[in-house]
Image (cartoon, rainbow, N blue to C red; front, side, top):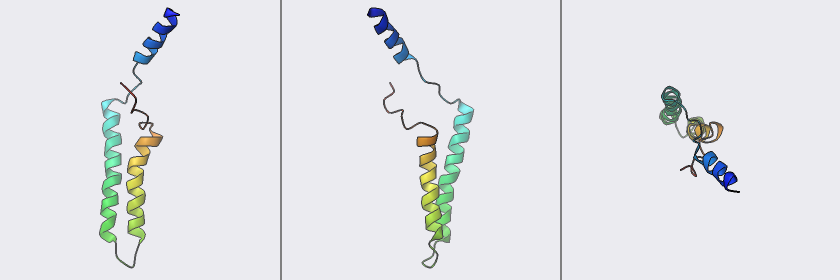
Length: 80
């Protein structure tokens, strides 16, 4: 039973693979471009044209949704 406990402790201590610095910078840059593009789309907003607001909401949501769901970083809250 103690060997099973030791195996569980060793597997719990193993850190998951993280992105290296280069890929993290690229991912951050792409998501920042999406976010800034969402803000830029608001410069075309008028009362007669709602599409810039739709683009703003879509780009803004994508800039948060992609890293949190597709890239799997939303499950890191329980990590030690």
